[in-house]
Image (cartoon, rainbow over all chains, first blue to last red):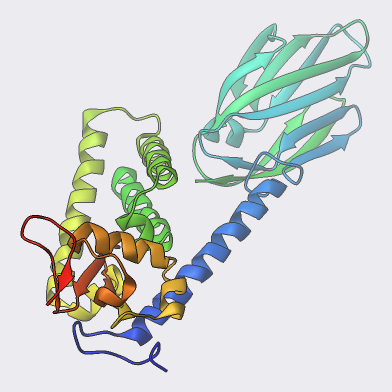
Amino acid sequence: MRERHNRNYPIPESIRLQNAFWAWERATWIVLAVILLIALTGLLAHGPLSKSTVMDGGLSLTYERFQRVTALARFNARILVSYGDEASLTLSPPFADNFQIADMEPRPLRSSAGPQGLEFVFQAPTTGELSVVLRAHPRSFGRFDLTAAAGPEGRVAFSILVYP
Amino acid sequence: MDSVIKSLVVYFILWLVIRATGRRTLGQLTVFDFILFLIIGGAASRALMGQDYSLTHAFLVIATFVVVDVAVSLLERDVPRLAHVLKGVPTVVVENGDVLSARLRRARISEEDVLEAARRAHGLERMDEIKFAIFEASGRISIIPKRNIVAGGDGSAPHGD
């Protein structure tokens, strides 16, 4: 009873407000712990639930579907080259608008930007499978619906959610 | 625009998280708490500055924090109830030598913390020499000794009349 009783001496207490505040404190700890657990799964980027692969024909794209603004993200496109000695990878216009490419391996023979988006042309490998690794920073946060096409080999659509 | 908005969001998140660590952390910094605040400062700073290191952006971030700080202090002055919500309220945790254990536990302070404050402030040795121990809104523990406990003028241990 003494614990719950409001005192006016030596200080005016408000034990009800204090108890409410302590309850809010504990609730906040629980929320923070839950956020950390969610982060470990990759739902806040970089983790098992973030990695995704989409395929169509001879094109397979592995990417992170949850990313964070300005944080480096990795895209891996595998293209089965059925004929010719060149292979192309085209990324839709929203990619150029919202991502800044930091690095690309292998380096393309040539690249261009147009209404269809960013096009990169690579030397086709002798093995027939080209693996392109692209690293880019998202410039802004939000949800982006993108497409990637590898000429006649395939075309995939994918969505990325970028956190602020 | 984003400089101001991001600064406001970071200020609010920092206030929320640091408040949730409790007054005990603010008032009695341990090594772990010190490291925590160093990391928080570094992380917040990187998030605020991003890739923009211009003087203009730095000024806007600083100005936003100053304006919010002043606005909050004015609100606290003019709306006392809000001050209680934002800063917290003092709470008695020891009364006439009796420890209010449930309050102590919820505040995450120990009897040893109270005794340490009593030793530091008044040279007291035992809990029954304390009339009131108050856990302040700042996180410090204030000690009001019993009136018949008087510290020696030469700094010697307190003695009764």
